[in-house]
Length: 225
Image (tube, rainbow, N blue to C red):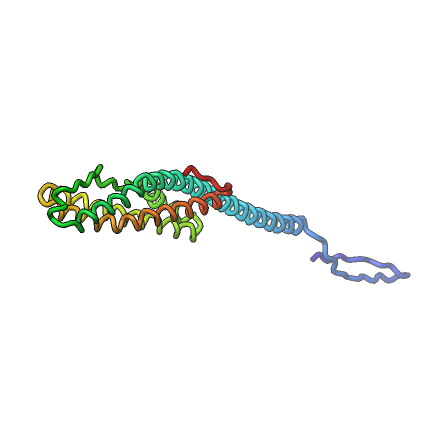
C-alpha cells in the first residue's frame, strides 16, 4: 500500500486529504503467472503419466494376446498329431484284445495249437511339448479359463495313457514274453482293456478341443482328420 497526499486549495486555506490506494506490484503479477504455470505443468505431467501407463497396459495386453495365440496354434498342431497317432492304432488294440482273450479262454491243448500274431504292443506315443512350453512361459495364464481347463483334461488323460504304456513296456523287459506266454498275454489283455477305453475318449476330446481352439483364434472349423 502507498500513501498519497492530495492537496486541495479553497480560498486561503489548504485541506490535505490522505487516501490509501492499492497499486499492483510487478512481483504480484509474476507470482500469479508462476502459480498458473506450475498448476499447468502438474496437469500435463499427470496426463503424461496416465497416457504412459495406459500405453504400457495396452502393450502388455497385446503381448499376452499374441503369446496366447501362438500357444493355441502350437496346441492345435500337437493335438492333431496326437489324434492321428491314436487313430492309427485304435483298431489294432481292439483286434488284439479279442485275439488275446480268445487265447486265454482256450484250453491248454488248444493254446498249444493256437497262434496269436502280434506286431508289437503299438501304444500311441503322444507329444506334450506344447503343454510343457506353455507351462514354462506361463502363456497358459493368458488363455481363456475354460479352454485352459479343457487343455489340462486332455493332457492329464494323455499322461494316464502314457503311464499305462510305460508300465507294460517295463514289465516286458523284466519278464520277457518267452518266459511265460499266458502270463504275458494276461498283462497285455489288462492293458488293452484300459487302452481301448482311452483311445476313443482321447479322439473325442481332441475333436472337441480343436473346435474350441479354432473358436478362440477366430477361425472357422478346421480338420485334418
